[in-house]
Image 1 (cartoon, rainbow over the protein chains, first blue to last red):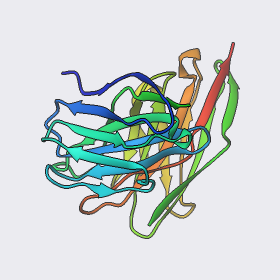
Image 2 (cartoon, chains in turn yellow, brown):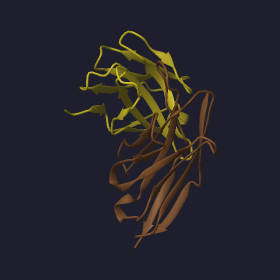
Image 3 (cartoon, each protein chain N blue to C red):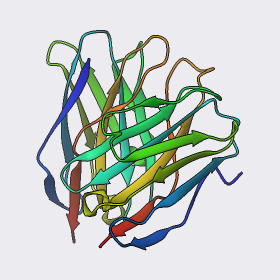
Length: 114
Length: 114
């Protein structure tokens, strides 16, 4: 099993450009998440999808949109990138059938917005 | 609502010395608590978790943590540090019923010197 995969690994954008970060998991998990990681701030939740067909805002959703394409895939879109969105983005998934919400993380996408 | 405070953004130890990383939580409901580790340029990996039952929890790579409700703490320890333990460590908390989101601390970078 590959676990959680993310593409691309690195991306450089100019201010105002758009892009989509892709995430897929092969563990048949119900829930998927997008986080951003910034120095000294830990991980902050952008959006999550508790189950296929649902999405909800997290702590820092402004400037982002998401799509839960199917049970495996959860994409994050930046419509008009800003320098404040320079960050490392992590996708995660978890299985709600268990009692504990243990999350499994992808390797991350390093995004720089100039 | 839940929150986590990690004391010390950096902790330095010598190889073979005791590792102690501090985590205090705030939760309006009985919490689930987690420690994740992030090695350079990688995603997060679960070290250990507390749900219910035994308050001393053992994880991978010789780490353990003790849940102390009276002190609202969940400190991470390892008796003898190894060079390979150098990484960033995140404490996280969630609620214990229904769908729950993880709330992460800001992280502690562990530096291990020879």
